[in-house]
Length: 404
Image (cartoon, rainbow, N blue to C red; front, side, top):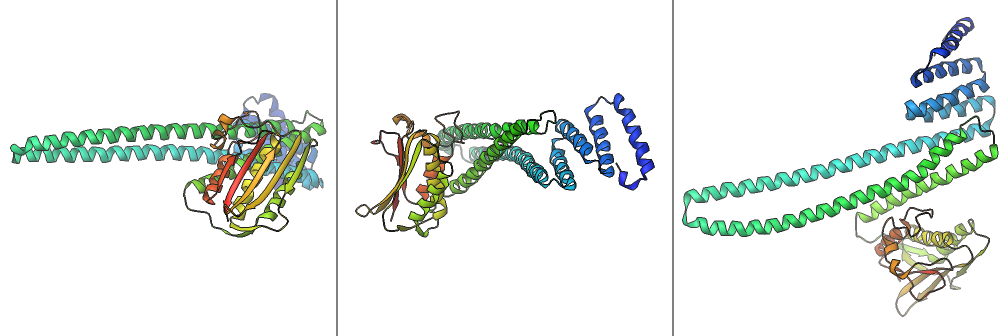
């Protein structure tokens, strides 16, 4: 462990002692410490190829006994490649180190958040029960005091108390019903979150194990797995970003801050982003007025809505066209933005359901089911409306109306 503080002869002696113990080691923790000692020796000797192999073994056992050590061990791989002058691999392993570290931190934070939320709900119910108990005790004391002072007032007071208790029971029943609904919503939210986070996380962890497996020499396959890891990491980051925005917007009904913005330019920028993911069989069109259109709105959030609608259209359209259209309706005093596609369409009975959170008509399609819910939330806060055009039959046409 302190090879850098020993003479070469002493380091060699301890190295031989460790090698001699290998046949006696059976427990994962002992194997972990065995490879840790070997790795330090090879690093001291600048035998980087051997150091890489022992560090890979370390990572394997770290996943078993202490996953929190994995990011640091991945960073060691990056440092070894850097010392070897292989900066490309050093960068890749450093990036992978950051991704794994973020994944572990995210999982830990989600677990803590769930525990805190459960604790908060329990404390809230406990406080409510305490207040009701104190209130009932107060009523009982007052009742006994009145009985002792004035017998004739007992009947009137009992009648009043009975009436009040019935009203309180009715209120308590309503409160219990609301508590039950809140508990169901919380459970459904946690289940949805666990499912949406687990899917990309399993892909990241699974393909990470394959990439670090030294027995697999197919570099082309490893690059494909790296691409899949990156894509799932982006899905996870997008889910968390959308959740943060939803949490921020759900906490208030106030209108979003607005300022003059060039909506024509916003449409061009978002269509430009979409064309980077263009499909061979799809034609992308824009129908914008010749004059630039500027209205008072929140450019950041409006861009997010248009991006969500275009991405949905691209996801469910394999052939045909995707059209982004904008026009002014001065008689109604609105700006209308339309995103139309020739994809699979949305059944009429599902046209409102798709605007609910975590709703996905195709469970196997990529996404987290928050896009349209977030879009309606934003448009509502911009004093506008968003809906699916029922008269459009070639696919789906999403319509946004914003006040001028």
